[in-house]
Length: 372
Image (tube, rainbow, N blue to C red):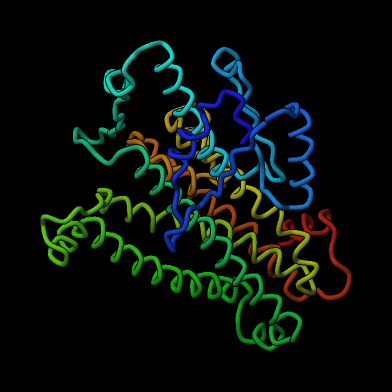
């Protein structure tokens, strides 16, 4: 630090007292005296030291800092926002304290009178006080991420299974004793039961943790211990969680089944993956807006649109209390879409599963739907 005021460095050093895990100071500070050299000459020397990686960064505090109210931090890496925030806060406290003292006020009294309040948002749901904003945000993101990953992973399992049977010609043997629809339905339902088992295990663990976790921890560490609050999540949310997984899985697994039936290998299947998972990626990208505005028109429309409904609606349920009519409406729309999806997919699947050689065009695939 180049401290041209002569009063900031010591206070800044005291404020920036972060420690590493082994007890050593996180930041090694050096107070550069300007002396008879100009500040510009000192800065040139520090830039050379930066280029040689002898230091990580430097700060030049000019004499008019109390009026200018701006400090530049020069470093090789300026995108570590956590480090930047630590340094900025330490500098801010040091400058504010010196400014208060320069005006003749008692610093401790001013800090006492101007101390901030603790602001804690608390959600009201079903007439009761629920968890705060951070907990709700975290829960919604976890549920969204699990839904996204499991729908994609289990859907890809259906596609990979079909491609494997098609390339090995096993499907030709299966078709001698099975209808195409029965084979496709068996794959989709069988993998869904694996996913459902996993979701049931997660839900039982989640209900136990979020319902009785606080009392269980108190029993282990003692009631007087400082135990972090565990968010209160109604068991009904886990029911919605399972239902939306099943509905989302059945909807998208049909699309993955189509992709597997019309291609000849894994590399060809990748060209369709983007179009299949894009309706799932859009809700993920919009999650900050949806969580912040769960009752907006955009959130409501996306929660009813079948291909974005599973992720958006479970997120809305976590952070607010959507009308029951909207939840039931999303169920109905998803079920009707799944029925239409299965009807279309089965027509493409029964033709594509026995097609080899050149990858069919979109026009050819659409013709398969019209076959009786």
